[in-house]
Length: 136
Length: 33
Image 1 (cartoon, rainbow over the protein chains, first blue to last red):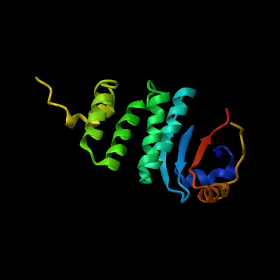
Image 2 (cartoon, rainbow over the protein chains, first blue to last red):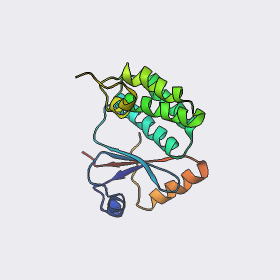
Image 3 (cartoon, rainbow over the protein chains, first blue to last red):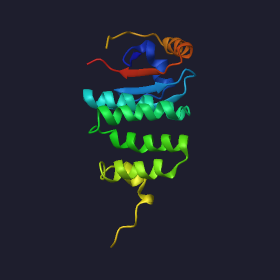
């Protein structure tokens, strides 16, 4: 649903969501809990990928690991070069590991994706404890 | 996406619909340019 922040009638919503800048997208659960939020302009392809990430993040935080894994997988399949792809790779591995409890599903997936396909992303840093220390 | 003007209470209406449908709600705060 779209909310025009310049419409005075929407002022209570702007206050309720502590909304300060547009564009501003929120993903809410049926209970109103805010699962994800992002701001600023995203070009169409990046926006679609970001939208899918919001959906995947909500599934993951609802402990719907299989749904989340499938949703993250869709991002990697459809938008492998998108800005959010490394984050999808990180969390896809987490969701799979939470289902299987196999270390390979976590470490192996991180290695194949973040260390090789997205080596400069912040999400590689987030799993860098799995890598050997750099030589000085 | 069709531009729709929503009243404040409609967020809660959308949440109720989402609850019945078991879906998520996407809220898009925008300012017309």
